[in-house]
Length: 371
Image (cartoon, rainbow, N blue to C red; front, side, top):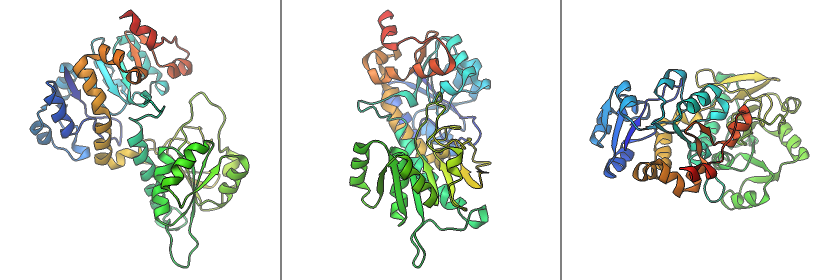
């Protein structure tokens, strides 16, 4: 199979889907890899690095034209739509539920599209999101360290244990990969760390690895207490696009003390936190109800090399399954890969997008019986 590694065009996006080590593995399986010139520069990889690994480095148009499978990081933008055709396979973070125009193109083209973010494992976790969640959580903590500084409009509070000064308090909404990543750093810095969740089993498991963190059941009493006392509120809870309720409402934000901060790592607009609106690395913060908000929607891009390595490691086994077996056989054989199928042959197979955009849905498990 011919695989194309594209240079991302989203502003402030520096990750790349395949690193040179990934290319070497794909080529060893007998496949051809085209890499767009400059695709890896933002992550610290030169064109020469890719050529040494066995890739063919080419201009943008050549990679788009020659490739059977597009191997990317982010969703497709309008200037890329013309390349999405029936005989193409797409493997990337698609986020189709948030991008109706992209969904139109995917369906009209009758291409095969598989989304990283929708592929689960046997435990109901999302292995291609996990590495990005960890980096986003830790990157969110680093952002809080930065923007709590006086020179960036913060209260000038250092987020660590300093002799003679009370330890700052941080609260994480959610005990998933984001919350535990934040707690790992924050607790090692000597902070008073609290995690709120509703799954006691998940909290008990996390407690084994984070003995200095307070694990609290997420109810109104505990939430209001934390909001009043916390210096930085982190959110790691993903919020379904169709939901209209919140964990933290606007009136709850008013409970927070002067100089405190919200870092929404999950970054769903008006999601778990009502006052969240996604921002960029170029313009990362804003104030609502007197509280600084940091809601950058692609934190991992700030740590592009680390993020690219972990993402490439996570996606490679599934990429090889598709390339080695062919996409139909790979989808038939792997129920988890099948769950990540967004569309095939003009059929929308991702239920969340169908519900959000009021489109017909086709069960992928039934669809494969017609192949």
